[in-house]
Image (cartoon, rainbow, N blue to C red):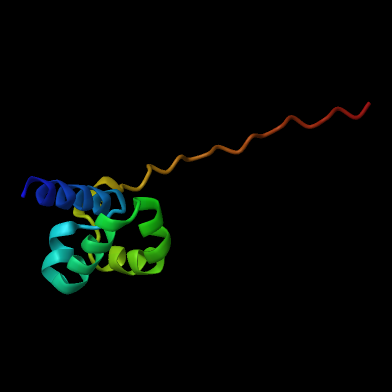
Length: 91
């Protein structure tokens, strides 16, 4: 049971690192979540990412992690003053 809980935690942390909300993903598509978790437990995370990259991107758009949304704030705009160079003297 402990390894089951540990592997689930690893998968949840992996999803968070990919900016996917694990709770929304599991609630929204339980079957796909379970299939991904089963494969994730069998392969290295880099291999999993390589195999499922396009699906991960689609899932991220659908179940975006809320922490990431609130953390993204627009940078304050910097107003630049134009530099006015003095006219060269013609003598």
